[in-house]
Image (cartoon, rainbow, N blue to C red):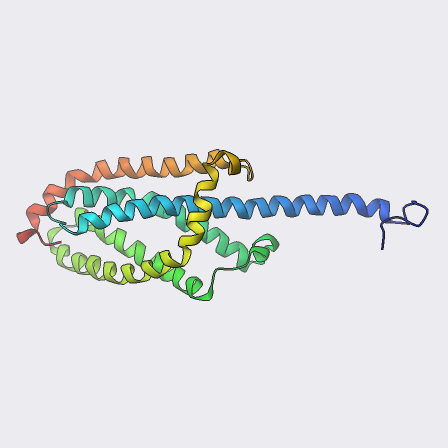
Length: 226
């Protein structure tokens, strides 16, 4: 039915309904933009993580000879990982609390939803045990080294499925804040870029602080295994 009568006259009550409907549509558009902004941040940050993880993977091939870059890149990973956990955690929380915009977007496939918490836990264990190897007393080294290696094996399997499941979305969304034709489609591109850059700077600073422990760790590890 038309919003107006046959003579072009607003029906009773419709004059009041129109502003409310327009306000509701504006609120929905803002909420949908928030969902899109979260997706862009997650994808762009994931692209950065993929580059860092690829570099870290190279160091694993000769980990003793490349222990210094292995440690440095591993520590640089920590703040971007926290950003990734925060952005995906926000989407998770908003979806399950029933936020309409996140409900409209829908959840990831079931396998990826079930795997997500596993990836988070294994990532935390892997990074924490790696940092712990630099800081703990020698008596803890065998246990932490075992945890670090075991968590890596489990993490690698889970992360491979996770990356393959999200790779298309990352390639599609990650460049959008950086391309002129899509940058302004969703507000907040600059803050998202600065957040990712700040996480990398924080990781680099932390990495430089912990590099001084690498020589000490090698001295405490006969044969340099690890």
